[in-house]
Image (cartoon, rainbow, N blue to C red; front, top):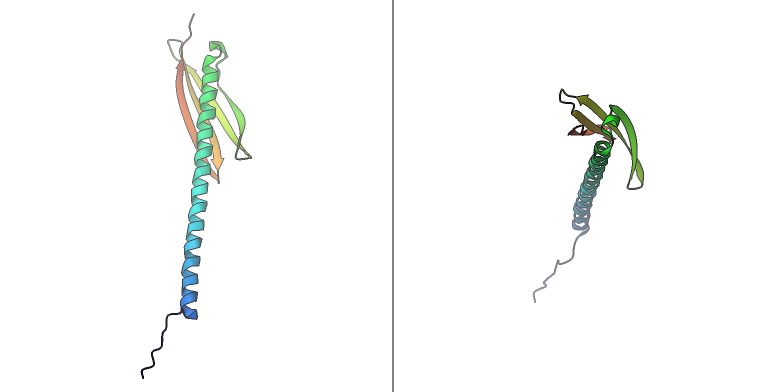
Length: 127
């Protein structure tokens, strides 16, 4: 008679190695999800800044020609239940033809890094 022994079960060391591999994989996935969430939030803030500046420039250019002046304002917008502060600066120059050249810039900070976006436009005086 031949005695055949079957070793089909996992040993304790094999189980520990599998658990370590799974743990490392889960930690990698968690780090990746944090990076993705930070990038999504940064992009959402940028999109809100561009929208805010676009609305500001539209309001500025629909005002009276004489009311378009250089200045700075602060705007606070709610993004994902927290307040984000934007600073909008308008630099207005008048050229020889009487057109006003407007350079509007919006600035904000996210995670210690300063960002900005600029729109240049020209407004003519209609008489």
